[in-house]
Length: 77
Image (cartoon, helix red, strand yellow):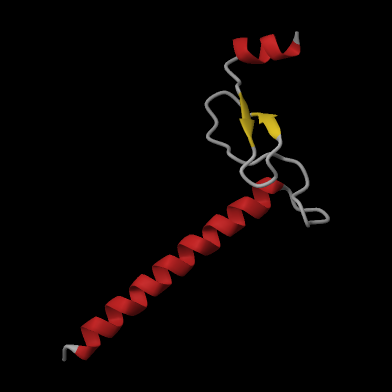
């Protein structure tokens, strides 16, 4: 019954990219992580842990690209 109501409201079940459990996202939400405690954590949720991991990955990529650019730019002088 509740599953049918969730679909009518526009919610669909999604699998958490961190813990693999299913959850309902809010209507129009692009959420890919659930609000459960993340594996290996005592109090941080999958959303907190997953968002931090993605941020660190993107930041590291940008830093490496920037350093490569600087190296190429300064070696040409």
